[in-house]
Image (tube, rainbow, N blue to C red):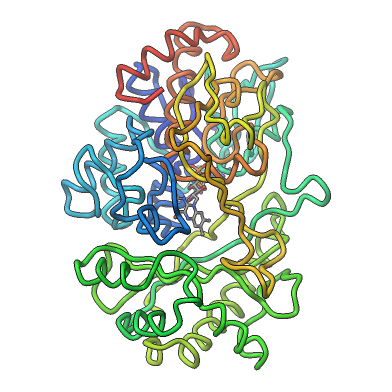
Length: 483
Ligand SMILES: Cc1cc2nc3c(=O)[nH]c(=O)nc-3n(C[C@H](O)[C@H](O)[C@H](O)COP(=O)(O)OP(=O)(O)OC[C@H]3O[C@@H](n4cnc5c(N)ncnc54)[C@H](O)[C@@H]3O)c2cc1C
């Protein structure tokens, strides 16, 4: 079979928040731009993963407190640090009646309707002149010295080699990073264990008032916020997120009713258990539970094993637990599940600079800042929560002074590859900082900068390491990005 070819200025692999930011920013700079996505729609985790809590436009402060900060969907008490394409997308969702936010003034966490986002993303790409290639997987590349010459893509046409002057890796898993030899880190230093996997599930026939009443009688079983404040939001029709159920999980674990998450290292499983509402009909909710630990997402066999176990053992088992133990869920059933496995962590670029824990804690300022993050470092347990830990053993670390930190351009590029820029959760960070930059709004920030830089490099025929950062910053600022 013959191999097809295509040629672009900039090719973006992956269409999650980073890929969307990158493709729009590149095309708006005048570069002939293609976005490639292995699924049949755009959006990555935002759509296919049902991760509909766009979380981190503002600096996180007081998440676990009972005061301001605990109610993420309405709180606006800290500075806005993300605008640009992320804000544009939230505004378009709001205009379509599909998001819980205010125009140009989003709260900490913007809940939206993923089905409404899919056509919005297609329209944004069309309006900006981005070519879209769906149901197409990038599976390798060819180097020419220290530059990527083309990437190999498979779809119904067979194999196509796609040439470009610059490439953006927005695959989440850093596929181009590995194939180009840019170098990466993955998971914990000792044994490469990553944060757990989750498949979001939407449940019908639930009585959330009964759950709120349970929490009012058992406030110690609620990890975040206070039940009376959640009640007020619920009564006002705002989204809520009730994380906890520790006591019920322990009882169910002792009775061997709760399913053991794949790869869990404890005798009794205490995962994150978060019951969320969103832009969803009444009497339904979303369920976020950590379901599989120790999976290597860069290994196809591991990935398949996790998908199968989650759908065969975890989801039905969790449903059985809900019906038996959780007030208000006696008759619940599964309406639908996310079509994409929820992935939080895999490869991280070994970049020119590694953005780190200290940078976030000290609100670091960088001369080559391309955007900001104010998100707390949200790092889920790699082996499962223990009985004395809340929130499934996750570490949530907020900077003491809530103003946010600069993200340097150097964390988006490798010293080794002349035409690769990285956006999203695979940029160059340590594991703690990953907990911050992996938030969808922040992925869009790094994606937007990556796309603008790739276009600048492609149109000027220069290496991504030689992009004039001052000009890049001016361009981003002119596009409403907060630097
Ligand atoms: C369960 C869960 C809950 C979360 N909760 C929140 C939350 O409440 N708020 C928040 O802001 N963030 C949350 N996050 C984090 C956030 O969703 C992700 O970190 C973010 O979406 C990563 O963005 P990305 O663009 O880097 O990658 P992704 O969103 O993962 O997108 C990558 C895209 O690339 C495509 N792709 C990958 N490889 C290839 C290839 N070789 N060829 C073609 N296409 C490819 C994938 O199909 C996918 O569409 C959560 C994540 C998970 C898993």
